[in-house]
Length: 296
Image 1 (cartoon, rainbow, N blue to C red):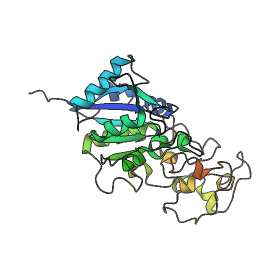
Image 2: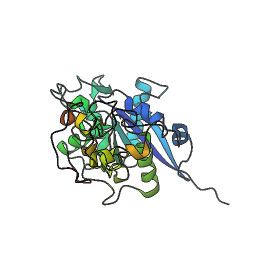
Image 3: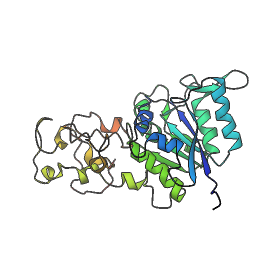
Image 4: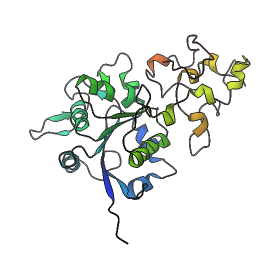
């Protein structure tokens, strides 16, 4: 039997204004493990080839920047760019840079994302900061951080963009998105919502599947976090946040925010944290229970 040639998908993973929590979350993927994703053919005949990721690389300095730039030049139109963190745009690199140019001048993060994004097969914005600006772009935003989508729109970059928000995102959301691209190619019409999020993971409100939903229907609201009852009046953002946390849960299906007595803070929602703050105060009254309506 003839050997089937493995198709390589080079990946360049950049980090901007980030706490690195998105990397930590994805590296804790359980099934498949991150080892499976990076070493094995998760999809038969197709292999993810991670060329640059500052947190997990053994190398540093000029050597790894060379690997990044060689991938960019040799694989134009054929690599996937993963962006973690918001993108500072003020000060020409004063608030963040990735490597240096031939003259020894720092290359700003926004310049890297623009140029690498323009030549990529597709771009995955990993986490709320990359998808929507997140905490680094919250007021007063002194570094003028923006999301990947905002940067691309301002600089006429038309490369397909997939947003995978969450602070941090569930590892399944990222691994599932990557697997879908390997299996089926870039998302087809209708597979992403109006915020460029995969509907497979962000298609329903948390409120729709919350185990405390019955309390809301009965108008039984908790007075403090340790009480039984719906947490809406204590500030739960489940009615305005799209994600499958109640069904998927976290830490290999062990628990999630509401199940352990907390409330949803809306970390996967556009506008987090400004539009969902204060987190422990009731959201301004919205039209409920029109479940499924997208409210931001």
